[in-house]
Image: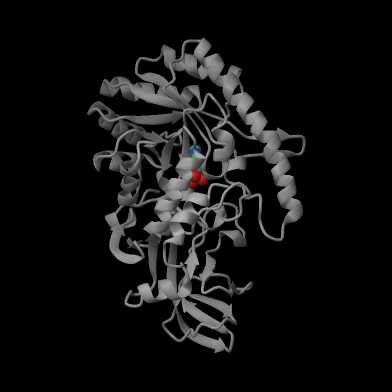
Length: 409
Ligand SMILES: Cc1ncc(COP(=O)(O)O)c(C=O)c1O
């Protein structure tokens, strides 16, 4: 647990309860989204502690507000660089003055590779992701055309195969030193591609909650699988790095992990930096991990517009469903006042969200109901700006990508 620091800083603050947020936002038109910077900063501090002596690359997809990415980068040199989720985003951020941008996923569109190449040509550090010789060939051809050398990072698969279970995500096909080498050799043989890094994202450790209330048996199983997988991941990453370096690769970065895996990822000596995104807002899917607890720094409010029965209040809007395997955990999570529950048959709806509430707060028409998004950054695709709270007070607004007219699809 690394919440002690947070607890200390929070003790000085006003309690984050319904009355607090309600009175703060009494004049704010609903729906609205907010980021509570007092909690965001506490999360950033706690994440720095959890990352130990590793640098932290910010997963921009889980923030999606340029000013907040900048806030993190400016706050401490432990935050270094961005992991971008889209080539247009990488170019946009570069043109906004950000630098050291690792494109987290391979791209195959020549025009987008070209646009990134133009940024590199003017001296910016943008790194493309690869996991096959075809990626190298595609990038090399554009590099020759632009007369620019592309730095690239090799994505290695960090999933663990159990006899009846693929534990992890399906991304890269590079699972062994033998499968990594031909790609490295392809970069060596190229004119315009240089391998500078290796990334492995152990999603099954970083993104899978293992302390979900009421799911004791599942939690136990997931923790066992994670423990086995942690070993497997560490061995595989070390072997691949060793082999590449023995063959002459000069790696400038070895990236691993995500919010949920910092404790294990930082134990790997070969890892130079960890990626963190979701932990800054600490969205609902990150509530139930055994190893850490961050603060609910981002949320949104919708308003009660009718009351079909005594305990049911129906709100306008709210159906901001998160991506991924569909399930009720991808719905926004009712947050404040405490004691709200969603209708099982309706969930959070496109235009109407009924909630059951039997608590003591008066929820008259127009009253705000606070929710937290299941995923961190996707909340920002619904709003042009987020309201900020600093030192327990409203502190203005800041634009999301959407508010800046950007939609990275
Ligand atoms: C390649 C990669 N690295 C790291 C992360 C971790 O990000 P977060 O901290 O938001 O879970 C992700 C998230 O999906 C990812 O795709």
